[in-house]
Length: 249
Image 1 (cartoon, rainbow, N blue to C red):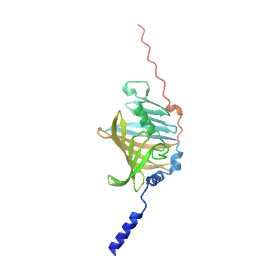
Image 2: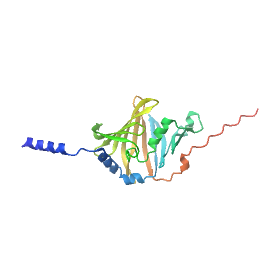
Image 3: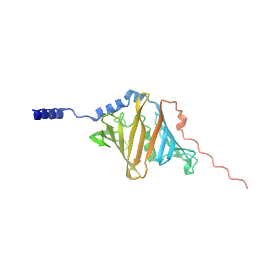
Image 4: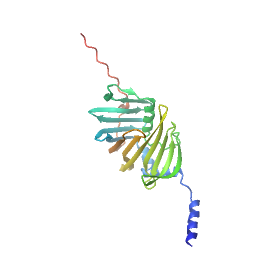
């Protein structure tokens, strides 16, 4: 009898429909608060700190607005550094710590990164209309946690492998493969400390790094504001400062 029950269970298990990638993503979106709430976000401000080494914490603010607008400001050694700003099709940075008081245009590779960061909903939402392709690769354990493994090939050709916790239906890890200066660069991002922010469930800990490179960058979020008023002028490249006139002898 015991063997008959086991065989019957196995037979029905094989007849059960396989999980599709769109079903997995639908549960992921619902776990985050639902597509309606995700799409209702028009702007966001994230305040926290970036840890780039032992005892090296720097206050950071990320501002984001629909229309491919994103800005990152970091305060370090008494200076405000702006390593990335995207304003539609224009990207720039301002890094006085490098001795240049004037803004510079982002490189093509920096622009590609900025455009990915500027996607308010993330690359999984409406992935087909964005030109991405998605493939479900089955389940895999991530540090002892069962996770759905989803491969995303972005429109740019870069690849992101997303691991979604089978219990919470939230992302816990994203592996990346990107082309940089003709070579493939691999990295990963660990997501955690999810909290409810106005009905949206958002990660407050982001730990990322590149394979083969020393050190990791950890973003610890202290506050997330949904739909703050962000002036478009925040994303416009400032005018260059005029060089001082030479002294008259």
